[in-house]
Length: 280
Image (cartoon, rainbow, N blue to C red; front, side, top):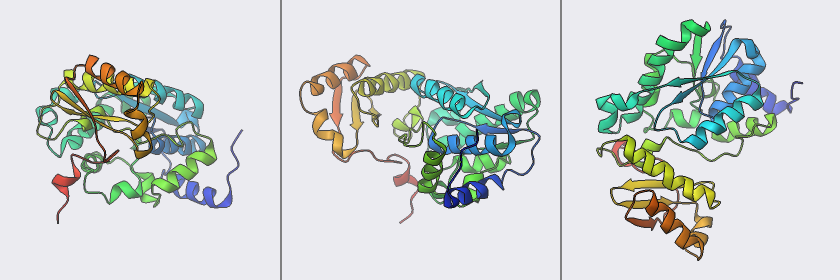
């Protein structure tokens, strides 16, 4: 049964759907986050599940919990999903972890979609979930990779920012509608410090500790022996109050860190990249 949308939300959805064109089958680079979920849901509404395919890139930079959640969201939408193993850690430019790391990650993803998925599943177009707010940020080098591979960006082209995307997600009843942003695990490592599988595992294990303690939005920045935890401001007092304080310290140290700190600045999107790419 098709969800009936209010006039204003239907107008937003219609603007996005108009950007799909008439592909024989559309592949959606899918993470389970709110942007790619809305994109997948609208593609499935407009084209039907037989002409839509969610593509989930799987590597050491994707947390197991995010992988499971992506499958659940796609199943709720009713869209078929395939997993695609990506090997960005084999790319020296990615491991070097410059401010352009995301460009090399997205290049790996889109190249493998072109080489391993498109012909096999009859894709004639691929889209990804860049929104209009992302499009004007200077710390999104992955957009260049999308341009190089002729990947569509219907949300951005339709002018939908993050608030618009969440409105559509709530109207569609998507499980990811209020899901906090969840950048890849590599984003927790300061630029020019190498990305390794071992560091990614440490970060994933430490963040899983926080999630199990009820912190739904948590990032563990990797500073060698030091774990710098970012939480929403409303969670800071609870994090340093017993018995949670001891549980965090024990769990994060068990993940391989020697020291555990909580950043009073809270969650900081683009904390490592923005200072390097923003011109004064």
